[in-house]
Length: 638
Image (tube, rainbow, N blue to C red; front, top):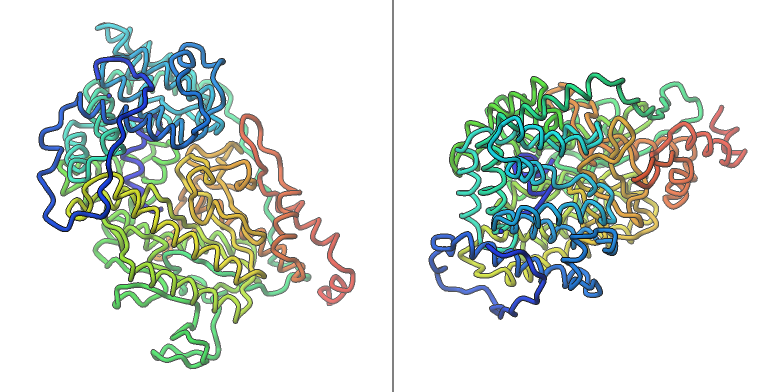
């Protein structure tokens, strides 16, 4: 749920990228000299005050070329122009290279080279290794098509429809929702103002160009785009409905051979009162501010709670009644938009809310409040999925403020002391896991170096250039990677089920933590939609993300007791963890490695062009029951 609204606001950039008056050429940019340490004196005047579009375009081009060489030194990018003309001649392209090429496409668009921009998007669609990339760039291609069609609105609409008709029906909604999100010029201006408050980097320059050129066109000519979308949707609706995928589920409520199993929810918090019958209680501990059981942890009655805010001691984060009352009703709408359903009543309420953000300050308030209510709801929603059909589960709560991250480190990075507190939290959770023999831990969370870079970019008084930001972000990320590697190694009998993440990228290429870490007791889970296709947002990796589960519009609880369907790999992960816990409940002798092996070996293959398998509960549990020791079967049946 982290950065939910912000992700929606830049959805178009994620799908295409960010501007000079000449076509892009992949020449080596001039080297830059990085300052050794952040400047201690006051920061100079913001470079945003005087920079021109042409300078932004040049910055994006030079920066993107440098990043492409960094991402894939073996790539013969001198052939870029030939690849654009003939994508079949190009090699397969990794996600980091594709990201930078999409920046180049946006730079060309801002420079007026519409043909070059379109060619680059189509090159990425054709040659990206990640087949979710086959549908990126719809916003940019639609705007290019409208501009290239002349002044006749009917011709413009027909040109946009031609682009939209390239999309499979299951991808249509998510690929066009950006035209619903941005409705008025004030939203564009607010987003640009917010960007200018950050350090001028490759990413912020690309975002600025994309917003000021591509999204501005989408708003200025919104009736053309909406009419085209309506026409294509009407044609889709006239065809027979796509067949829903049949997700296999098993309910162990009446299973005589199922035994209690202790599971953990490592998240932003879980409303224990909603799971009273299943909430784990440490009998040796009392909520009195003391370490009653002598295990080094204070008040670990139901799990481990860690929050730098001394007032936040509960099992759930509490943003206050006013925030919950005002913003909880928007949770479903935010996720409807993520899933590409802009026409629902809930989504329309969010779109109305977004129109109220007319400057950077109001946009910041809106983002922070939606982030806060997301942190309040997230872990409870995850826990509700984890215990479905599994009354044998006992739930330990690991509430970590760092699992949500945005509240604690909003627009800044962690200090060394705060990183030490993160490590202490990891060690406390490991101690609890090993002391109480927690068998399965769901962690619907993740840390990315580029996310840290974006937050550090707000600290313009500390950092003066991109290199300083990237160096500090790399240090932070390395420490977090070490934390997760350590807990996986120190809790070898526990299966950790990890959400892959929602950035439509390869977790190994980007080094996302913990999803990119290889360990025998780690299972990384991606999301599929109701049709069994990769969700438009899901991260992937042929090596690390091999299992997928249902992650779009998944119904579950939030702390006020309401049921709300939410979307994300955060929801797919507990679906898979639920199966793992059921398997261990039926056969407690299962090791993490064997549990993973069975889940992968009994899953349903995902149809091309995607890869991996979808968890199949019926077949997995059948295999567990068939293979468990006979003595265990007899004993459990008594």
